[in-house]
Length: 170
Ligand SMILES: [Fe+2]
Ligand SMILES: [Fe+2]
Image (cartoon, rainbow, N blue to C red):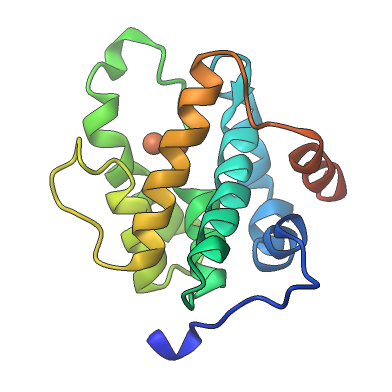
């Protein structure tokens, strides 16, 4: 598993890495369907998870460690794959339950590696008490919190680069 860890060539942008490793998920009708669910503010779940994937790649590269970038990107794209509108009142425990629901759905629709499963299942740490096992999961928890805070306060990282990735995979 750890043998898949590497560094990304300096010539590759974060945006290209996300489009490359996440291509099959970004092209799937299932991930596209996430655009009908609002995550925070005006940002939908497809935009949010793509932003988190870009942010996760950016943070990982800054650490100069080796990562399984495929698992990092794919886990980030599927970390909120819960497939419902969490603002509806009967989803009151969403904060605690959606990571497990997302993993269940992701495993049904995609081939999920153990690192990807850890990324999805643990992304709500420390709200969900079990900490990430892999460094890829830790990076995504961090990227998710940064992107979520920006979205809540009306300054989404849903920027031109994320828009370009989603346009390519329309
Ligand atoms: Fe989440
Ligand atoms: Fe999230």
